[in-house]
Length: 315
Image (cartoon, rainbow, N blue to C red; front, top):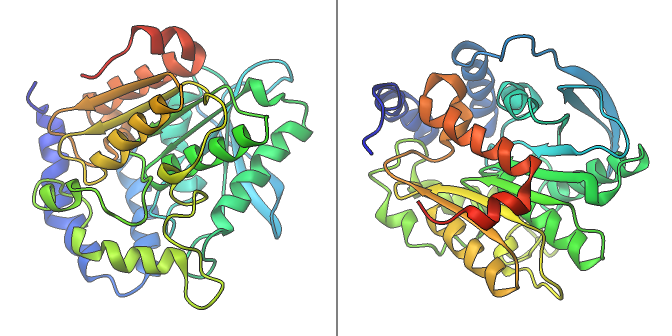
């Protein structure tokens, strides 16, 4: 199916405005400001959505978060959503409108986490883990918690799932949009889609990796599963996972190989490979019908992960 006119218009805007800005940006500070401004100007919140601010204890101090949707109740499902932004940008403020669309299915907890390069890895992972612990301390059993995220946040959700599964407290499911799962950037899509994906300049991938990992003797290797869940090990089958990627996505191979890795470990995976869509298209919400379709699929999966996985396949 050809892209909608709305998606074609968005991709033209990305190619003409966003990609050059990312290519030329001298520091993450400008990227963060542009990301925040774009989310304010371009994205519409669902009718009646009202984020509720809350603080929680991160790995090294207080962090902010938002609750979206109905009031959470112990014993009922909730989603922990981890925002994208390449580990160097993004916040609850840039992603709450997207998360609010998932909150039509169940309450969504959208935490901040510390960003690189000021806070290199594993700071983001440690804060994501603290967010999960906050939900458990509030009375939510691990098996009632779903994880979700986009781009770097999708990879972070998968990394957190792998760590929790290793400890015997896995979440109920994971939904990942265009997940970044391999910080070695060894996937061929990074080269094959360099001209197709209109969002991120592939030439800056190595620079991004260096910012995320940091420098010095304490820097983590790019294969550390807290950053690159593709290299995680699973002693038992992981919980159900849904992955959305595209043949044009720079992170296409991250999604495809992660799905294969999970299946090798005995996990049930719903893999959706769309045609001619940019990286992280779901973030655009009601700007494009393709995003709304993907978010509707994600809501259905988060509500009934095993049922959706049984009927899913590649598309």
